[in-house]
Image 1 (cartoon, helix red, strand yellow):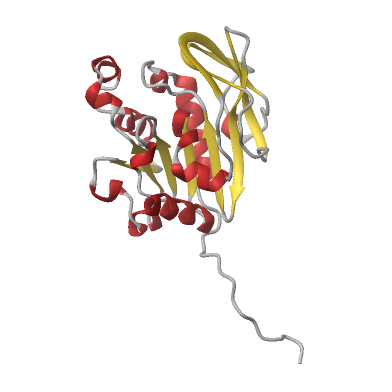
Image 2 (cartoon, helix red, strand yellow):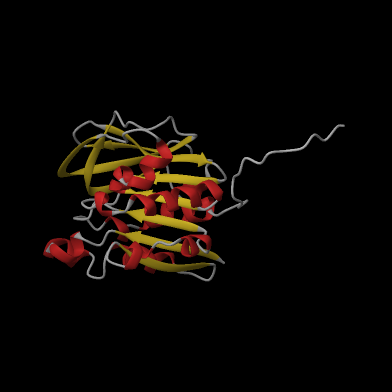
Length: 236
């Protein structure tokens, strides 16, 4: 059983009627609904929960964390972000969705600004599978399309990914590395771009396939705290 925690800022859905209409129970609930299965157990947490729903004990019992945030990145306490970073370094998998590229945990794990170009006018997005042999691309064709998404554009100020699984093209001609894999310490990190709150992206079957595959890929293979012990000589 893979223990998954879906974390969502849960702000747009509470204050914007258009977003609430698409995700009446929150983006976290929509994601949890399609992930829940015989071998994936899903819990959810939001910014409104005590301690943002994030504690060391909770993370110790989480195999893969999914993170969605947008307008309140700054309200996540620095200590909470460090707890998430440390859990990844120890082996927890993490999936950052859409505008979570500007979240505190992603910034800590990347070490760069994570800035990008963007435009919000509902352009079509074509997501190309640039590494079809990767487990996250399992079950997909050469590409899939979303009729409307927020446009993200290069340059994307992130470290060079270990593997780039998806590259997106938009109607305006922009391109973007929309599916990026990293290893940080003992943990795996996946960034996946689609998921703007004003579009029903998380109901798309291909998007669901990607996220489900990413959970299987990111689950821990080895989990231990990294330390720096003083050692004795082996050879006397």
